[in-house]
Image 1: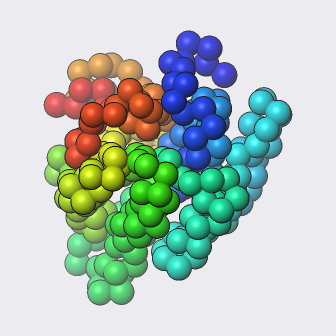
Image 2: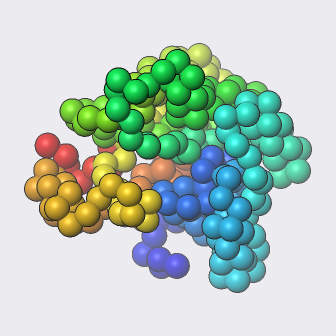
Length: 256
């Protein structure tokens, strides 16, 4: 545990729901909120990694986050889990729409079925998770929704047309929901991570040459990891960001 981490008393005992919270950036978020004393529930499809994370945090703190297996492409199942969490833990205060998949694909190989499937994973769940969680937040008097965008929207990267389209749409979704929900005391913001060195990225896409290129583009010459993303998300969830909504916060090392 990082003893230098900023403590947010406003997050203690708050109910936090994270999609894709079992590995990568999501696991870093689950750890960070749990260590703040929040009541964390997360969904994922990787049961082994998720259960290992639960056991790790239970051994560290004496209590465990709640894990539910859920394929977020199934909107009914996703909203049912959100309702269950609200019933068992209390109203959700913070929703983190983190889950996504950036598998590469050739533009001329994309058909309608593949396009729809990618949107059903990278965009659609964000809206319907927000719809379900916001109802609980309204009853509780407010909350925070944090949608994950991507630095890829600013870059000319090939073989990612459906992913980049979905992530570009996230920015519009955030702005519109911020307007709709602001009157209920609900903040909606976009967190934009840069090139984060998760195990998946290092195994599939980023080798030494790619990492050197990333370092050359960043103002800050450091390897970005999930631990660099979590503090910004904690801030957006906390009462310290009470007057911030409809914004984009980049954690990208100063990409230029």
